[in-house]
Length: 175
Image (cartoon, rainbow, N blue to C red):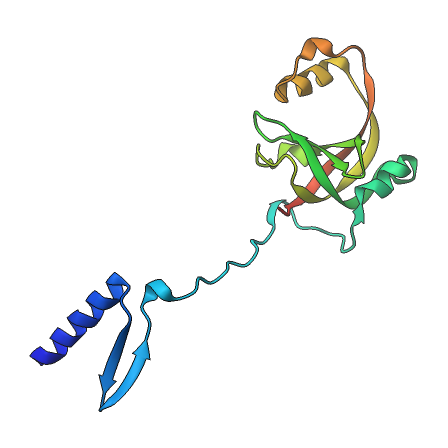
């Protein structure tokens, strides 16, 4: 018994130090390598992070299709793929998304019933968003609030503005 425990201790020591070792089992040499020399296993891509309720639509479309014809989608349920251009830095309660091909056109995402939030550091990330799309007039006071949440100067806002919006019921943060 003592020789077995000594062998185990020696093997453990060799593995911990990264040494290459060979085991003798019934007169046969079995080469093995230490853990330190084993190639690393690549991690799989992390699954999307989900926020809100379950998606009800199966097909999604690029946000550019909606930006090209916003009247066609006014007050309709949509599921879109977009890129986050900005997000509320206080709570993650709204985001502005865009199509990378036309970043000057944007849609403001708010969460239905203030029921969920996005991470405050998701700028530049791709998202899939489902909710009701609409053209809205946003008051100067609300626009100033959004500017302040984004860390911008609210005094630069002058007057009400029309804005494209989407009240989200479900969001997947893809990367």
